[in-house]
Image (tube, rainbow, N blue to C red; front, side, top):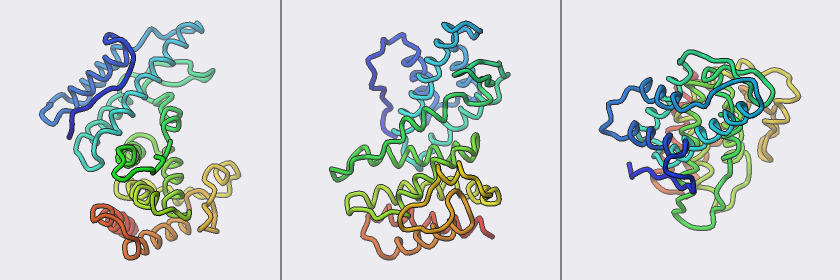
Length: 269
């Protein structure tokens, strides 16, 4: 894994930099720091929680910095590197710290049990690459982010499946240009390579729900029900099978497409 970096104009003693330093030390391949210890170090930076608008605003800013820094780091870790799992283990360790009731955006949440503001932070970063250059670093970071979020869904927050459906829709349910093809299909594959078991378990929850239908609406190539459903699952599996045989992509991408299909087959058993 290449050295991690934090592109930020914040001061070296800012919470953002201090969080990054904790993550950087913890995620090194040689590190033996337990996830709980790193989680406690991050928690120790949490500003005072209270009921005043000023205290709430300070906590919200801190959470934006925390999740934003974690997302920046996750993008730099290769999707198949053990440090991706280590990072998710740290977040899971945060959820196991003694909960404190906090007010975020007018609603009460448990810090860190409810992972407040993580979902909005991820959605804020859900910005596909422009696909204007070959071997674009943005494409690699996009794929890494998919793998991280799929792992996070599986271990900490099943509701992140919404982001998975968006990526699977983009990669498998839409016509793609030659420039988009490799990156978008690989991004979709990450959700099955690292999250197939959790996604499959959610198929049983598919019921008529207007809001879910809107959020998880189908792409142009899929005419079935929106949201997660057995029918859509089978469509995705078929598309992975077709693409593993038909599209011209790198050997590595062909491998993850095939692995995605194999994972889908495996969880069905």
